[in-house]
Structures are given as structure tokens and as C-alpha cells.
Image (cartoon, rainbow, N blue to C red; front, top):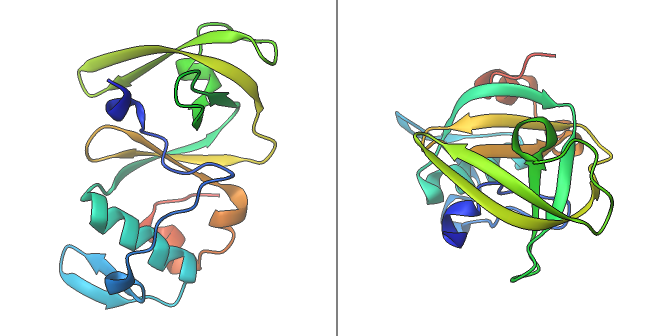
Amino acid sequence: MSAEMNIYEIGPTQEIMLNEKYDNYSFHNYGFQKSTSKNMNKLWSYFHSTENYPEYYLGVAKKVAICKCPITEKEEWFNGERCLSIENPEKGSTITVTVKIKTRTYTRDFIFMGWAKNPVHEWRMKKGSTFQLEQKFVDGLFPEDKRYLKITM
């Protein structure tokens, strides 16, 4: 189950892994296309390597909880309104996170570390997971990249 819970691919200390082969090209359904945004190149490399693309822009999350897995100590982010068992957890407390992916529901305990301080954009991906990006990453995208990702501000 832990492999299926790794659905929030980007956090403040994580970075999208670049695939050298696709570094300067964007993958569309029609093939590769040169992109001018370094951030969008990273996203296309990531989307292509996972074969999971954005399906629907969910918007900016009101509260994003930064949690740590007690087993792996890996940091993960969750939408506070949709995923957390309690509304206002205390730092260091154990909380239950429930995530629904397509027709399956996953529940797991995490240690609550705090709330994200910057806005976080969310997308539903084709495989049913949720993808998140911090505002500072989105700020590095060009208008045409934002249009592709269906970001409306």
C-alpha cells in the first residue's frame, strides 16, 4: 500500500527528477515539442516518465498539511479539507489521512508537521492521483504553459 500512497509528487524539499533524454522537449499527444520554460520541461519529463498527465485543474488548496510517514520518514503533502481526519491537528500529533484514487480508498497514519505556507495548486491526474505544485514553481511557467495546465487565476 505504501507505493500507492506516493501520490503527491512534489513537496518543498523534493524536486522533479529530470530525464536527460527529454530535458529540452515537451511531450504532447502528438509527439515532442520544444518548450521555452525550464519548469515546464521538468513537468513534461516527469509526466512522460510516469505516463500520467494532468486531467483536471482542481485549483489552489486552502490548507495543505505537511506530514511525515512514521515508517519511512518521507515527507508527503495532503489537502487538509479532503484528506485529514481532524480539522486542526497539533504539530507532532498522529493523524489519519484518507485518500480516494478512482474507486479505491486508502487510509494511513502520519505525523503532522505543519501547514504549507505558500499556495499550492492541485490537479487530478489521468491515473486518479492528485498532483501538487507550489506557487513559486507555477510562477516560473509561461502563460502558454499555464494555459495547457488549465490554470485560471
